[in-house]
Image (cartoon, rainbow, N blue to C red; front, side):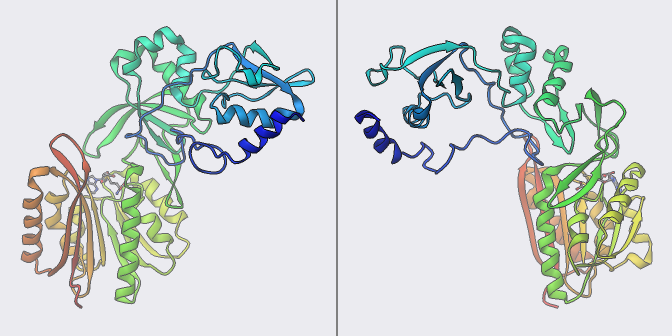
Length: 415
Ligand SMILES: C[S@@+](CC[C@H](N)C(=O)[O-])C[C@H]1O[C@@H](n2cnc3c(N)ncnc32)[C@H](O)[C@@H]1O
């Protein structure tokens, strides 16, 4: 080994990558990561590397040393691998590598060759490959920058300017993520049940909209073509679990829980799985297509043998059954556009003899939050439920004037 090489080894050995972390430099998160609900996610632009590529040809036994050296100068093209070049090795060079060979590398040869195809790192990269640079750049600002990933499904809004590329968009999404079996175009929310109108634009035609999702460690079935489901509330549902565990400890007994707008049951899944937490669950939803799946989900995940009742009626009628009055320690109300309107006929389901919790979610004009809090206090007062703690907290914006708000009320806490 020559002296220069020895010096080089000493200098590169102490180098760390630019991230300051050992090991490879972290890359950005893939847009198709498990359970990513990607509405807020911005995609990176597709991968662009020069072709043909330049390679530095070095003796094979010195490959690692020169690779590290090039990397330390940001001259290594990390997206490609080192190629065999006869007895030697060809190291791919980044665009930052000088046009004139630096003197310390003058003993080596530079070759140009077509780099092997590499897979784009997001769906836009696949799309660009599929429709060509000209079309891609022409419509650049209209390509969907975000989408929902629900189990095996992608749900995406497509602007009318790029409607003619619907097939290519869906095809690129499937090419990018092998887990995706169907792509649906989102045509907006419809009807009383606020179900999305979804048009299948790619993938298997005979599977419908059914898919399995995994949330907070629990697997269950959903079908966004039949009912509402959003993974976005997954952390809220974990908070519900935390509240429930705390309440159970306080009451020193298992809980009775009511979810009158249960959907496919995502809020109930972690509760039912928690050892020794739940005594009885009343799960209700007015949409019969949803309750069929809800029932399957509850039965499959009921390893703790919790007593379960599933109803398919207007939630405001649950109170008409005397058995339900004052029965529940935890009540969930997730009908964001009508929560406040329905509340007067739901509060009576709460147990008024010991501490009970209402967790609700509402969409409201940001200017009316204080008013809403006052109205809720008045309602509980009129129904003789003593509030010990109330939290009304905007969590994110829903529209330019409205916010999505979490409401949590604790009653009878001193008992
Ligand atoms: C926003 S979704 C919430 C679903 C579920 N809790 C979740 O977090 O994914 C509201 C659900 O309430 C149901 N629904 C609408 N009006 C209802 C009513 N009057 N009584 C009972 N359920 C109703 C809808 O079918 C829908 O599944």
